[in-house]
Image 1: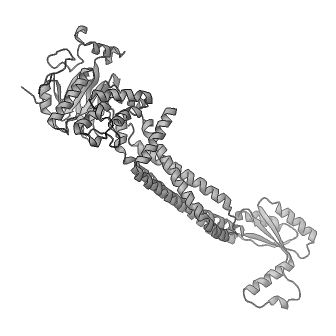
Image 2: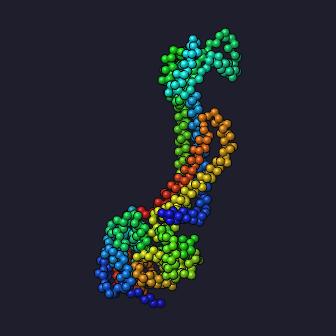
Image 3: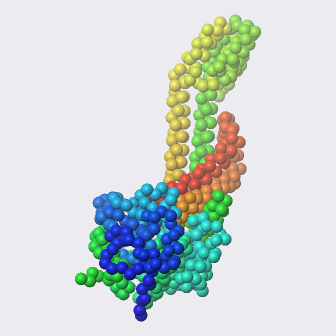
Length: 276
Length: 294
């Protein structure tokens, strides 16, 4: 099986992500990208969907989960977040959805400084992030359709807008035929597709996937990765935490490696393990 | 706003139906706790009425001079009745005093000694009931100043003893009620917390997809209110069924006491409904708060 990496960003060389990258020439961007970019008014949000600047997160009790982490994820990027358990991947995700606040440093999502974001605005930021977990987090008594629709219902979307939006994302993940089934009757891959559909239904700027293939066998894992790549091709930034060395190495995407709360490697086109 | 309310109510209904066992458990707990609370409320009301009755038994007896004219006595009676501290004034004539004394002797199984008397030695008297027994001193003073009054006994030590007992019992009643109230509070809030925690997964999903705090909280608050209302209705139903036999007993028991059964029934209804809904809402509010944005 071969994976064709999608061409959504200009080819680049070397670790250029320590600072927000210079914008590539206008001509080298896809039309879709330019349209997406035009949506935002604030120039500082244009290129980076996620920015962590010098972020340290210490939990009460002295456990320091992140130390001086710098991470800039430009719009349309596909980033693997790798590292052993406890390296800080989950903490980064918690900071991005503002479940936790950074002890020091700044966290920006879609141009918003999360430390200064009023509490009332937090749900709106979370709607710009689609999040996918290893254990799917589907509600067992709701069908595929209802699980996806739930994300819109609980955010106050008018009912007439729900059905078309849900049908669109369910078709996108290829579950049109299973829409009325309960999660328990689906395979693991189908359940994860449902979760991805739910993450997409708000039209997020970024999909954060926390070990999305952790419970799946290799073949199904590849299908899920293919789906994430397709979503990325549609202009949605993807940040995926994973242990799956095979996938990371094969795709040659940007790899950010964490160890004991520090970024120890950040390279474009990297493998799962350091290749010196 | 209408959409939000409709959403919250619909979600609350779904929550109650889909978690039937939890709903039943929480409602049953709520009903039993409200019964317990209202039971203690009724007992405390009875106790308070009984104590008030005992306190009203404390009266000042002013013996009248034998030579006071009926006109004088009537005028005195009317004047005493206008004292602000005085609740009622009764008049006991010499004959009445004698017959009371005879009854007393008979009830004690003693020989009627009055037959050996030539003349009635007992005095006519005024029996003055006070609004508050603590105000005895000025009333005694004013009575003693009256020319028609022979003497008025100082009832200070009696008042002290009676009031000490009634105060202790009254405080004890309130303390027990408060303790029962706190127990009910904790049990009900914890039961509702269990019902909320059982759905932590659902709340988690709501949070992650960007539901606002109001969208997460209000369905649970409505559920809590509904459980409170249902529990209150069950408790009141049980009380209504028990009211007839219980009421007859209470009527016999409290007939002499200044207890208003109509008022008590109204108080208990208000108490049960307000506590039920209040605790339901409070329990949900507190339990959901853990899951909201920090």
